[in-house]
Amino acid sequence: MSHESHDNHGEHHPSGLMRWVTTTNHKDIGTLYLLFSLLMFFIGGSFAMVIRAELFKPGMQIVDPVVFNQLTTMHALIMIFGAIMPAFVGLANWMIPIMIGAPDMALPRMNNWSFWILPFAFTLLLGTLLMPGGGPAGGWTMYPPLMLQTGTAFPFVIFAVHMMGISSVMGAINIVVTILNLRAPKMTLLKMPLFVWSWFITAYLLIAVMPVLAGAVTMLLTDKYFGTSFFNAAGGGDPVMFQHIFWFFGHPEVYIMILPAFGIVSEILPTFARKPLFGYESMVYAVASIAFLSFIVWAHHMFTVGMPLAGELFFMFTTMLIAVPTGVKVFNWTATLWKGSLTFETPMLFALAFLFLFTIGGFSGVMCAIVPADFQYQDSYFVVAHFHYVLVTGAAFAIMGAVYYWLPKWTGHMYNETAGKWHFWMSTIWVNVLFFPQHFLGLAGMPRRIPDYPVQFTDLNMLSSIGGFLFGASQLIFLYVVISCIRGGAKAPAKVWEGAKGLEWHLPSPPPYHSFTTPPDAEIWAHPYRD
Amino acid sequence: MTPGRKRVLLTAAILTAVALAFYVGIFLLVSWRHP
Image (cartoon, rainbow over all chains, first blue to last red; front, side):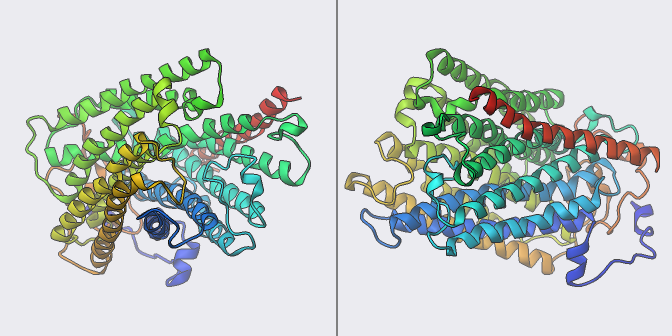
């Protein structure tokens, strides 16, 4: 580490606003992504608060149905493309170069461009709410013909989605190129940290499926404005074809939002169990298997459209197959904890909550995979409960765990552990009050995406809304912890956590602006996953 | 251009080509199903 700190002579980079606009530094760009995703998390979250307030009791209270549909659509688009994905890309930008001993990302100027597209894309997307006819209201899946009823906002939404896609693909290309070309000498692929492995595989998924989404929404655009009939039955097209194309993108997209979370949990658990990760190579193969399977399960999102029986059986069985590599991972994480010297700092608490609560989302996923059962679950609140367990207590909890884990490394300050634990317990209690009752609402027949409901669903909706408000309020503690840690706090050592291994802990906290300008010595990055 | 830089750009070019192939491919696939 000592040779790093004196490599910064003659540093000339702009200060103030221009530093952030023109930066090509992976740490700056990582910070931009993370702050952007935090902002989007609160904007998307505020939409969720209005949704839960409207659903607090039957009848129409706060917003009219058109606005309600815009809010559900925007909540999903903002949370998926604005909060979860940029947060993972931010973590990748910050951590991948310093985990593999690289001086920066391989394509730093493109990195700058990848980020700066996003604020424009989301300003455009959010701006559609103010247009005549309002924003998109057809759900994040954008199914035609419903989506084609969008007013003036339609082409702007399509353009915004293209911009998000271009940003994601450029980010993914950068990550693959960095990992393939800039690893420290002797760091072979099977010696990389699991966070790097999980992102390596995720990046391939992004490169393959984001262009498919772009193609699908381009076809929507030409159907509406240029007289094509890709999805217009009257012109010989097929609206169900859109669903197939969308979910060919959409299912890998789900894994794009969870595989980096797997990588994060695989970093945190060994650190706080003070043991090497159990089954490193099987973890890599499990992630690769899940990624492969994600391409051949898409139609489980549309079992009720009227597919041939052979198709339903194929997609049911391939979907159930995903439980095998996922089970390998859950088993390995549990085995990592076995007989470990466990301590329960905030990152560990989030990783453990992930282990339990993501698994609940996984189980309800297997339930949805069963074709005859799915005919009841389809489009009900059961599905809403399922994917929120996967995306909130899975992806979002892993991101929060990662922020607590690496925040002292990024800022050079220890965060407030008491406030962190308060954030964890408040979030974990209220997120279950928020989403667990939705399973029962769905099984009892409450459809998703409705602003009003019959009175028999009132009690569980009230409970869910109370959980939602308090979960939302709990995130203000997170905001407080992050801001106060950036502003100051006890000095963080280079190796923040006693059990931490890996290259990033050999750099000072915070790391110098340029790190690993010469590749690190082989002996300082002893493979962190083996004794 | 250093050999390392050439390898970086080659990798990036191949991945860009793959992404573009998926974009164009989905149009071809849909057109094939619905001539």
